[in-house]
Image 1 (spheres, rainbow, N blue to C red):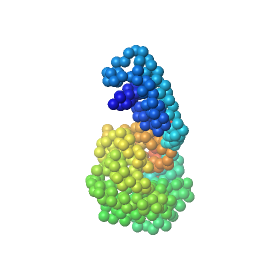
Image 2: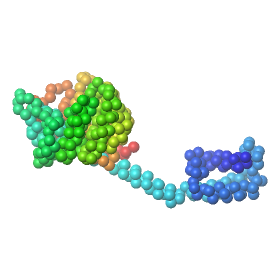
Image 3: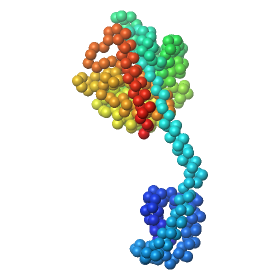
Image 4: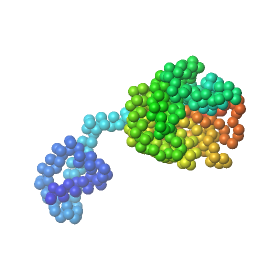
Length: 384
């Protein structure tokens, strides 16, 4: 009983001097065993300074308190020294190294999708994107190859991987590195597993790092998503491709909801693509707090802004209500490569350009805006 009383007194004194959180560290240190033994050996010798009534009611005489303070100070000095053992130093160095790695700026890859040029031929989209100053491109879905003609798929789902390789070569010949392609299928679709597998193989042949997919606006079918993504994860990993899932209304309309699925699937090659415009558009959810709930799962962005007033409309970055500084800040220092794919570059309210040169100008403006945001984030605003 007296030993427990002494420990209570010792712990109480440590908590008062160093804060309660240090008590567990001192008591738990392996090297403190010697101190404990010393303390126990001195206990009987120090009995004039401690009595049952002292421990019980904490009313020692002043002389005893002074002697006791001196004794406990000496013991605590020895105990505190154990906090700076070589293992503690190594742990601190490891933490510092981890913090340093986390503080390395993200290498954002600004890529314009061909989607804004869908009313014009694919080749015109590629040359326009390059002339707007982009070094990266993301393949859209369809293009109108002739005035008044039908829309033609950029790459059919059943196209052989060699066709994807040829298209990627066309892009690189123009100075554009392809970083993402649309899957054009919902994961829950009857042929979703088949088409997504084919898209992964196409991307691998083209040297494209990411395949983009998303769910139907009606949502639901989470079990199907999880089941299929667990199958697709190893396929994508073996191919060196990441399958990214973005928000598209319904039960997968937020980054938080998508991240919950990705964490359940638990496959490194299945990640989140963040589309702030969709989050705000479909569910009227503020994307800034939402992205903080999923930032650790985000591998890329679809760049798109949104306005709720004076019209409810998607638009290009900087034209809407989304604060892109706050949007990109949670992922500004990951040390990773992260595609930012410009899906919407248009001004709200006013009509869209009817000539491709007008789209070129909007693409350039969007790129310069995001470049300015990134420069500010990574130069002036520290992570955290």
